[in-house]
Image 1: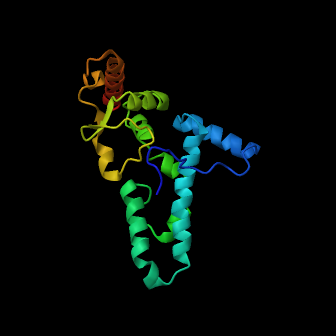
Image 2 (image 1 turned 90 degrees about the vertical axis):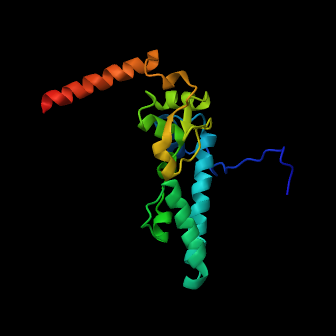
Image 3 (image 1 turned 180 degrees about the vertical axis):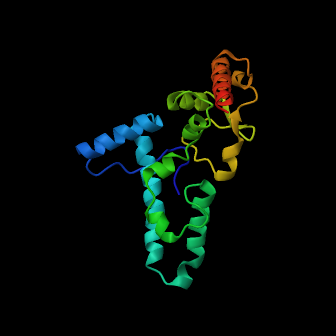
Length: 186
């Protein structure tokens, strides 16, 4: 089984780490999603390859053999919001790394407008200013299930939960100006 105190790596590093096309795509993903290092990319690539490996092994089995495992895999990916509920097993093979990176807490905090950049989103999550359904989550790489996505907000004890907090006043001014411009267009 192994000693729980000893950490083991949860990723596979690339076979050819110095190929320029791989380096460029990894660097682009680092900037786009505000990742700390390439190990985070490799971790999610390994997760994706495991899902795809399960799907490939299921395609080789007969229909009655793969029925239960296929449903479990598709339900898991549907709960995470990576695939829609109408997806088939072939859709698992079409998944890309971006599909998984879009489900990270850090990315969703930025997309919801709780942070001004993905880097600030990472900082807010790491410092404990973000909660999901009232429970603080301090891991930016947490894959948010679909049902928890609407419950992402500032933590109750965080100073950001106060609308008069100086960092949020600029957000409120920008939101009011935007609504005022939209009101004039009507």
